[in-house]
Length: 363
Image (cartoon, rainbow, N blue to C red; front, side, top):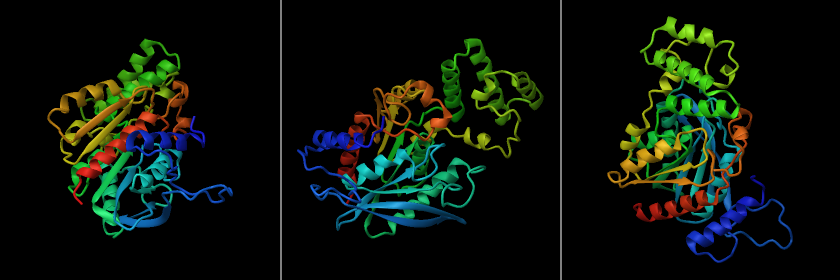
């Protein structure tokens, strides 16, 4: 699926198609022990460990810098819910592709993960977005980085954070959101759970009951439904075989302390409306985790009034912009960090958009 020879082939095709290069092999990172026939790559990358803070939290990441003398634009990566550290396969394409396009890349361990301090549990989306903005301020102080050309890339929950951070600061030059739906998180999870249960072979009646139980919990979290009614529904669901696949806690948490109660307050449409920098939203046509059709329809309605907005749906791609992934694997939590982008159209659209945005941004 994501064999070691696939990404370089895609990049070569991408550069020829988008930028008109006719060979020359723009390999982003030199091999540690190249064969005797190997030529030096056109782009050399230096990686550096960096530490920065947001309040009392110390966050650690790696900066990937292309070779060159002038200040480079930079991309900061936000994590998906399941991909919290910088070493995962998902981020390899950024460290390979972006330096070859003339962009520095910074990927940091999410708070509470890897080498970063703090805790993820109990942390709302605004705080996670502010962690990214703290990274932006750190990079803006580096003379090798163009402080006016720093933006965000994020996948799934990270796509929401990319939008959210961009709505909270005029310092953000651009934003890229991958597979982040424009529905609220609870609607997205109801869509995903329905697909999980279908793939598992549950009946439509079972699926309907599971979703109604999820909705009842969400309404309780919003203060719209009473505890006894929802607890009765959870008791009825306790021995149902679909419960373990439905992302429903058997214990009803206190909304004042529950992380989910904080997360479902996110309204992506309102957030997107506040983003003034150029923003690209990409979705996979075969993504079973998010309601792509609804998101694309909403974006189509916004397109005329938001001139800074671009979006596309990638044929054959899943949630991670990978192709040829069976739904059973895509929806299996044990494979949550296994996939990386390999859809050629994803690379092409991303590179072309970044090239266009780079020309628009002030020097």
